[in-house]
Length: 330
Image (cartoon, rainbow, N blue to C red):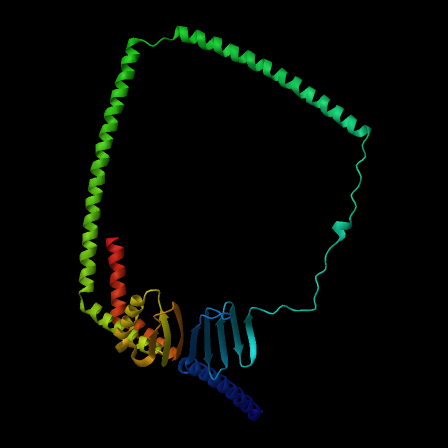
């Protein structure tokens, strides 16, 4: 019995080790196997050919994953895993399927409308109903007019008896003058409050500027800046293509302008070296040529830079200082 249990545990351990080995192999492949890319762009000014043709191909793990993007007047995209096409654009329309057209609505017959006495009776009923409505509206308007006349008589009687005295007029004038002075007082108080608030704002802004200036002039910021700068340069070197070629033919309307373009390309020769060749056409206006770029990327380079920046003490300290400065001064 014990032998059987140990055998089962041995099989489970072997299976777990195999799963762990597959996971480690997958992580190793993702981090260290490079993603290769090829970019090619061609421009020709001839009849029957597209003005620009671009082709981009991305592969990984010996073409296990293969992506292709092509543009020659129309966009084409294809994604493959091994030999299986996972996604393709544009998709091919399936043939042999016909759409059924619903003709029931077209063949449906409408019922004829019979003209006769029912329509006449309906019109009579509508006319009688409209007459009754007019009578009821007239009956309702009469009491409203009576109430309006009674209200006018009451208002006339009260207006004749309640005339404002001289004392009431003086009191009303005094209230108006007091209201004007109150508005002037509140206006000046608002101006004083606005000026005080503006001065406080200027003081808080000057305090923030001094606080952040001390942070930027400190040693932690200098060390963090040098670290980020070095990692960005490393990533830039990894992004640099392994192969870059460009052969162009440039021609403008004015031969002098064409000469200026060639002069600028000559000034950039130390930067591109012999990878770029530019020829001039002083008779015709055209822009033709071919550009080819080939390179590779590794995810481990980006992961290493991200981990070094994330676990750096100076960067954590700077983030804490910036947060504290925003909460205190804000």
